[in-house]
Image 1 (tube, rainbow, N blue to C red):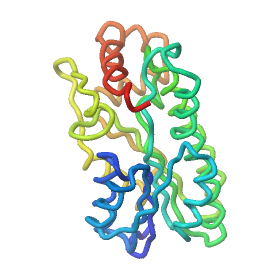
Image 2: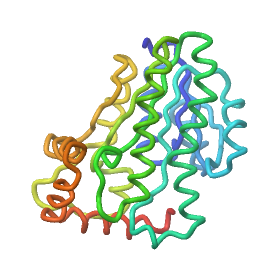
Image 3: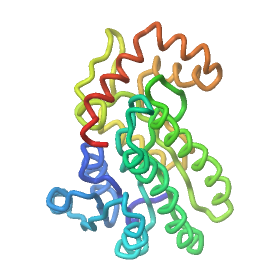
Length: 263
């Protein structure tokens, strides 16, 4: 897809990765529309990149249709917003569980439905879901987060086939551990020796390439983590045992504790 004349809507634009996405796309597209809950920060990001701010709380189901109306006719939707959802399931209140499901899964599905209708009618558009390697391999103490990201992956792959005849693309981006910004960086969790990270700019570059080349899926992670994700899909029981041996459960526990206040 040629992005030069595109209008792009980015959710979660006030987060660290969202801000980098906003900057990267503002340099390449005709117009960016940014959304997030924190109105003051959202306005600052929009002013910085020359975009338009449309505040919205994706836990408010009524707000999603209003957001799409105010955004106007868009060519690209980048569903980037997400809430932390790591930790044992019994550690979540029902309200926290609903919030995670609403933001991480329901909101992208509803936004895709509303945006794709117009894209299909124009035979032009692209939907992008910023997911996680947690959408490809399950981990202890991440059942709720895995549920939202596995669900998003299945939805995106099936929707891609449904929209293919209408010339509308669908892509999923699967970051591993990301430095400098995002859930891992914000949590303060530490990685064992030899496990490396990628940057928010790597995520932005991968997203641009995915749209331009209509790629179904793109991992943003070092080779070892990409192999682990592949192994997790092929042999989940053995993958779980391997993760126990290399200390992955401890990393996930650190993530959960460091992000607890954002649930």
